[in-house]
Image 1 (cartoon, one colour):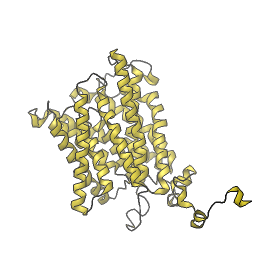
Image 2: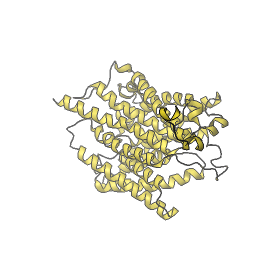
Image 3: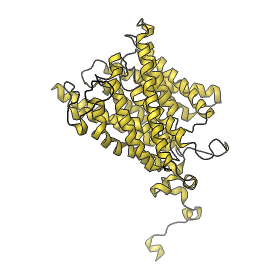
Length: 417
């Protein structure tokens, strides 16, 4: 009975996490230009299709196979062989849950490289990204992992998923370069295609995050579930409000895109410590993440790294901060609760190591692709839009209908005869 209930709980949570891919798709499609909305959704589809197969073939084994070194597992490929066994949870169910996490990690990159990266190059990145993610996830979530042995706390993946994906996004955006005219011609408009669609994506991500965090208990009987969902909710709300306040002070307006990313920043930051901090800690962590995200967005502009959806400020900055914040706010072991410096030191070491790993692997992989000349689309394709040039369709056909055609009434069969 315990196994059956846990199976239902974890599959349900995994479905919530998997549904977050729909959130990624809508959020990013709404934030990019109309001529590239379809291309970004196709990248999210690549994350799901290619990523799930690669994770089944090698990723899950790298993550959950036993290892003596603590660096990566070897075995368990295609879900066969020696894998970590959890009590009262079948291995295929654990694979499904962890697969959704692996796909989410690589999905972070899609928005940062939108509107100018070759689709074929992105497919290669997904393969590399899932393998690299699985290695660093082994460090924290496998009982043999070296960071796990040190005592690192990353309950649901502020660093394992978000810092890894965020710093991969930073490397990718830097390697592929900015969109044409993005910084050389500031007057060039780069308008979002559909902000209400982006808000829908944000709410889907927020909804899915309850499965992301609470599902990481891997047990329907965990007494932590209630604490986790409360901390998740409040951190997101605090991040949205502080980001909104920042834009009111600095821009004299209530910026819609910043409030979306503020909520997501709060969610990213609380993910590591959602089971370790109290309500006050969750509010502080989420609120601080919203402020840091706003500052990081300005910094990205200053260093001229083009990130159309704000993936780096949301995931990289908030992921590292949220992981480190556990060392301060964890009720057991946190510095502010008399725990000393040990946990804080481990959290800093772990978050920075995973961030550097994600950045380095992505930069090396995309650097190799760039040498082959297949990383970026041509200037003409970028100007025309990737939807039609690469995928053969437009996301919004009504935008291309000539006005005189659109206004002409359509005759019915009797009128035409």
